[in-house]
Image (cartoon, rainbow, N blue to C red; front, side, top):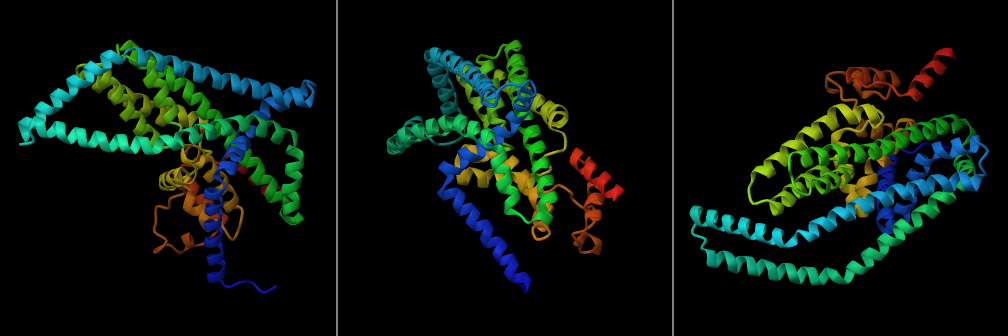
Length: 391
């Protein structure tokens, strides 16, 4: 069979990526719960296998981990709702604090500009009317969004149960999809994908726990009101790579401003969040997840925004593990290897304009670049290296 020219192959690749994105946009309500359920199923495989070794019946071995997961989620929802209830009970005091801050802001604007208090009130009223009009326009879709969220989370346990029940059938389908001479690579991709997804998602669950306790506890000791609410909100928003931390900082500042009449607590909150985030990014999270999710910052940020545009918050949350799995597939495909390089963090010290060896797809060059960037090989890569050495 005659091979297609390079330009045709590249066009097919780009067309395939476009069609994949279009499919995600059009069928997001169906596809996103399936992807989420797939990732949760990977995490629950370890307790499922443990229970099966203890001769627990298959259905019960699947049901027990799902019930434990639902219990954990219910505890988070209960804790979060209790903190929100405390915030609502302080609403009269919040109104006074907001009025005080607005008066201070109005006075400051008067001092630095000719924008009078009357003009400020007129401007605020105009913006409030616009906001009210916008709010009424989206209220109609709010009920639909809530019902979609209930359907999304209602389907998840069912999908997880069915995926674990029919996991062998699904694996057989995957292997039958590829020629027999590609089965070894398929097995490698599946094994490494399971390892990365499990490590990343379990790491995030651990991160939620220690971030809530550490940040919320420190703010509580420092006398910040609604400290635990700020802690859990920041921990949950931090699940969204890069963007979530920024939103968490803003919400933390706003909650502190509405709960206090001075700006000192705001500085305390910002300083504490910065310290906890530094500890998390440089010490705790690297030790928990390790170097498994090897995506460069540019690819991660772009992926987060693309995921958000395609599927909202769930797309932003799932963007990193999806990109990590895509990179594993791309690295093992000769055709898609350049895309794997684009997503990876094996950044060369030299320019490919000067060094011709950096223009090749050689596995040796990739290993050299990983050593330059101090990237430790995963367990699967070490095993593959020892197998190739024996051969």
